[in-house]
Length: 326
Image 1 (spheres, one colour):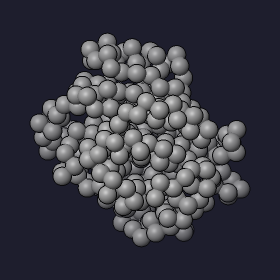
Image 2: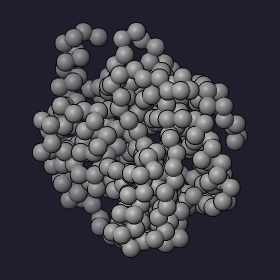
Image 3: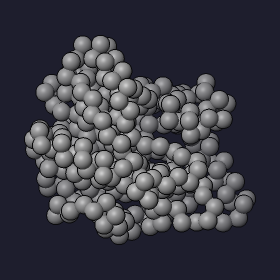
């Protein structure tokens, strides 16, 4: 691809993002929202939210707790997690909010936590795969995994697969909501999961991992649909969150005035958690309470690029040493 073509694509994506993904885009889209959709209660339903101590994850956990859900906030840091749980309990008046400690960059940690959680034999009605990161430098975890891949793909894949039996217990109300990113529009699906190229580009790797999440959601919807579990992916737009500030510090400084709040970024997560499944399409990608395209024409990524997801899933089962449920 020529440098001129790359520049044109970047400019086109920037214009599209400014019109749609910013706070002004949310305000414009919200004119079509039906607020009755958000008055549904979750009394007695168990909701698991990863990366829940701050940002969009925290906002989603708080909103689900407001609606009466039993909320399990999965966090890596005990101190920050305890503060977040206490705050949600205080703000919402819902005491059925619990801290679950798990390092989602570690497959072994996820398996250990999942084993303990599964032993309680509680159904999981809503699983929100929110935890994610954008690491600019090449960092390898203790398990030998590139860090963006470890959290965004291996962690999300492992946790979701391990939760299927508990999700099945909540059928037909069970659903999995995976938080992707608009960055996925810039990347095709690739089997080079850990970025083998010599010069590492954290932004590109992040976008690739987010594309994998969308393709996995499609696959899960087909694989587990007859178990009464619905799968959705979404993106929150350009929101000012601690993770975004860390990963895109300079950009955030220049664009802070146009970024969405965490609550606005979490709005579609909550909406997806509340709606009856007849209103939604399992396997679909959502943005601002509406089904959204998975590919943008000007981005140049073929809509057929997801055909390699079965091969990617096979690699993930092997890498994560997970049994196939079916």
